[in-house]
Length: 578
Image 1 (tube, rainbow, N blue to C red):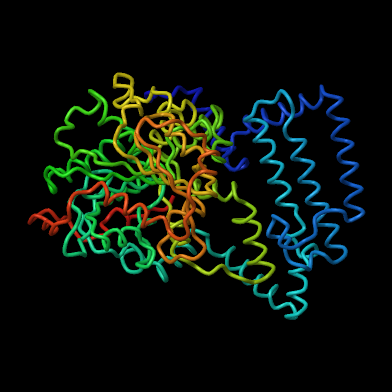
Image 2: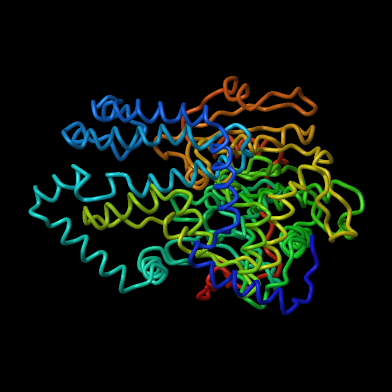
């Protein structure tokens, strides 16, 4: 990890120029995009045979479009924008077929022999972005569903859409989201309402101990480490879908880290700071409150990556100087958390040396990576659903999306300190240091960690439609350590698949356990062999926790003076404008 250095006048000149240009490129490195385009253009330019193939394919697809040849609209169309039967009518079926054929052509054209895989993926993605903007479904004259709705209702959807647009232009998106949260999903009133007490607070995190709700509890507490990219209460949403509340109701003592939302003054915080002041300080505090009790540690998303780092550091020799003062780990649970970043998903499309340097220059100017930039990245990656389809419904159909607790949480963004953000992109995404055994705790002089040191039982969850932490990437821990691993593949995406309470409709999961030092099974083979179950994965995980816990007993009382205030604490409520 590079130490910060004094900026020279020429470096400052370059940085200010790049920062000024960033809004024009949406924060993306123009060099990365240009290199991908040049890689594609040069390989196509020197391949006349491939040019002939693509020209023939274009001619064939063009003829098919004019003849209306293609899959009919309806349930068979994988694109939900074209499933309405109105798309079968002329001329809309020609538009639909033409658009789908354009997608087919770019799928063939974007990847050329000789291109780097990264450039090929980036070229294909950018082509999909342009096609997604130009699809006839986004525009009034090209969308028969929108036209019929406005004809049937004498234009009232368009009138309402016009009012929606005026409202959006008058009020920034962040202010609207904050107003909706205050009205419908206020933290501490509507969400994050499970009773508890803050029992630790440092300059980076608070630790919440939730009040036991059963006469007897499992002695081993559960420590939850959420990602610091977003607020912790994704795991304590409304009472009916709060994972924390459900765990407490099942007889578990639960602790939760709540990360501070950093500002410019925190720009020099590092990954080591997050490790020490997050899970390690939490384990120190738990050791005082729950003497001699091992802990079930759980981490979600990047919080899971950090918890895996902590577990490896505690398992190895010499990485943690005072580990005798920390609670020991009984088990480790990782929810949608990667430890091998060789195939990191769609976020990896925009993480290369040029893009990381470009982000570092922008973050140095403000001291942090803004939460709105992270939200914008996800919107860009999923522009079909999060941008174009939403705008079509709001501006052409006049339909506002109904607020939900998950949407409110998603808009409650947090920042990342500039230095920590750069370190985690470089060490995890670019160098894949944790999987390669080169990640060091304590900087260059620290001990390199190895996940092979993990021998405690592990429960892992991957989600079938996860674009942030693809489940096959999450699964890779199987070949990095010999521990017993119970892996659950659950239906849903990165967030909705995790917030999957019992009774939630249309939920299922596959589950299988590899014993300690068991044989390697490839991810696709595991998927075919694992038993499928209907319903939520939460009960299966809870039974696993109970199976690795001691006999239940009366819950211990919180010592006098241990409480620093009631949950949800102070840090989750602090939000500063970017």
